[in-house]
Amino acid sequence: LRDCIVAPPGHKLIAVDLSAIEYRTNNWIAGQKDVIETLRYTDANKSNEDAYTKFASVVYNRTITKDDFIERQVGKTSELQLGFLSGAAKLKKALKVQAQIEFDLPFCKNIVDIYRTKNHMIKEHWGKCKEAFMHAIDGQATTIGVPIKRAVLPADSFDPMIRIVLPNGVCLRYPGLK
Image: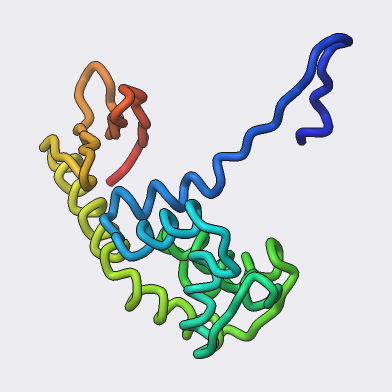
């Protein structure tokens, strides 16, 4: 997509990557401190390991570095995919599409189990999100997130959708939830 945008003559186009911002934010809001500490360390230091190799090391039961391309891709795809409640079938598909790696379903199920055990705060956060939505469906406002709060508001006659109000004031709307 970036190749479709061209700067006019005399101007430069600068591309900026927020380096896995969804992954970082998800771990931060859920309070998954071990991952946040790994990200801080690898951001500040030149290292042959990162959060993706760290997870891949658990999956493969040996030290994985950035030089272990396939294993790191498994770690990266798993961390990015599984933090948002994906299961083994979705991970299998993501590994094939995003990393061009094909594994059987039992192997992917094992990765999911490892992820959910290791990242217990993420898993707990899913429950908090579900509970917040259930409260909103019942007409109660609630908050989720650590250390920030995101309001989950029930539908009303003015706005007949469940809403999540983000810290910056942006409102995400979810129509027809039951």
